[in-house]
Image (cartoon, rainbow, N blue to C red):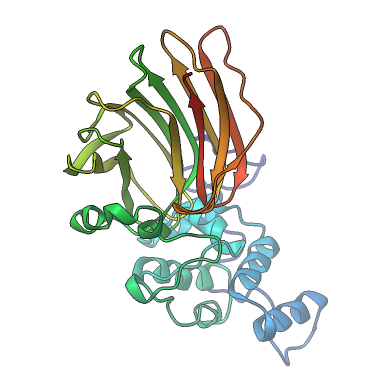
Amino acid sequence: MASGSSSIPVGRPVDGTGHPPVPVPPGAPMMAHAGAAGDSPVDRELRRLLRDGTFAQVLDYALNHRGLSLERVQYHLAAQGVRVSRAALSYWRHGRSRPERAESLRAVRGLEALLGLPAASLVSRLGPPRPRGRCRKAEPDAIDRRRLWPAHRPLLAAMGALSDDRIRKLDVHEYVRVGEDHRLSSLRTRMVFEASADRVDRCVVLLWAEESAAAVPSDVKFCRVGRVRADDATGATVCELLLEQRLAAGERGVVEFTSHFPPGPELTFYHHRFTRPIRQYVLQTEFAGRLPVSCVPFRQAGVHAPRHVGAPLWIGASGTAHLVVTDSGPGIVGMSWEWD
């Protein structure tokens, strides 16, 4: 993350805020266009990109040629009344996302002027808006949430749960505590996520315990509980967590919460269902009292898919088994154990 101050070369003028001015006045041609005298390799490369390049390629080339940091670009756009995060600018220049909303398109037009590019040279490379809502196709490496939670579709529909394409889990750390009665006692969750779109101000979590009353997150950190929909018949809860800060595309956040579960049946497994790839998943299960005789990790491609079991997990002196999974695709990851 950039600090609140920046280094400025000695003898270089600065504006009233301490930011260096743009080397070339906004709107001035970045380089000569086709047919101009003094044609240079830089001119030819720009013309090639304007003819055959993508939005990200043109933007990245122009930023590199002008020597502008994203912090300075953000500052000069803000001076024009256009708000855009540095993370979003980075995503745009590297092709990881593209601007679509009205405010983002204003930023693109501001970039054209700031970088001295021909009018509409960036906007014209965005193409038509991507379909949203029900008509939008799922990513090749994603699973529709309703497929992973088929029994809870009515609950998800009642909440109007956010589409998974607006927020992506990066790291999930879960600490499960199993009581001396072999029942699920509590679950502590820490989730690191990244906004895949602008104006993300909430995330949705689904909790479920077999043959148990629904649990509601408590002791939340870096967020607050919003709408909650629970179904005691299925032991499921869909909860909305309202973030402390609204995120732009590419920005990241963290939430933590604890879930306490009413008494239910003897617990023999715990898993997490991922609709999209995950960078890291850590599952720790602490057993109070007598330890299970065996504990193994498992994966499933879907709810009804067979389990693929891994090597036995060690349960240490703390009575805790640890599972760490990195760069995992969508599906189900968990651990199971036997008491006798």
